[in-house]
Length: 233
Image 1 (cartoon, rainbow, N blue to C red):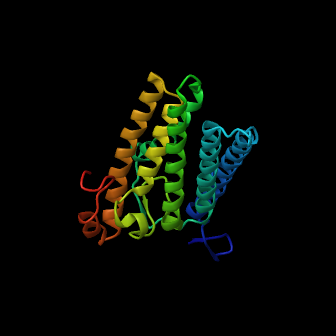
Image 2 (cartoon, rainbow, N blue to C red; image 1 turned 180 degrees about the horizontal axis):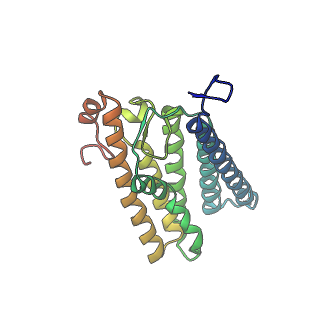
Image 3 (cartoon, rainbow, N blue to C red; image 1 turned 135 degrees about the vertical axis):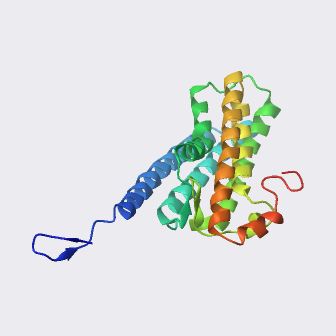
């Protein structure tokens, strides 16, 4: 509180809350716009499918793009509606690791799609993207308003896929990313995805430190669940 010239107390503006609202709206609009692009591209891909001579590659590609749009749209909605964080991990590298770990794969747009891949490989790649995005969308229905990109604690979620592993969303994203990498297969694409994977592992490390500090029950939950792969890691 501060006093104005008349001697009355005034409340300082809540810049933290204002910043949170601006970020919610800005990123919500960004993801909504991205979802619109995915939807348009999916419609264009499916529009050229000849129903009299079904093309497995074209159909799987169109559906994979559509699920990418659905997943992105869900993120847009959750970013606007998500809960305010109870705790967060401050620092430059944790933030960079989280952002690049989540979005570095978009650098694949600078590579040319592989049009010379065998039909079976094209279909398999599209199915991986479709499967990964479907798993991610399902996971988001359980994560709900606790969704976050930066290492933050909002509400501990242990239901649904979180009963099996602690980070099912990252597993789903990894599956979709691997499928996308195959579509753009090259040395540069592989290096990009490997770099994103390493950053995701760092992101998990910082996220778990926040969750352990914020929720006392997280340590016990972690003892009974794997991070990413049951009985492996």
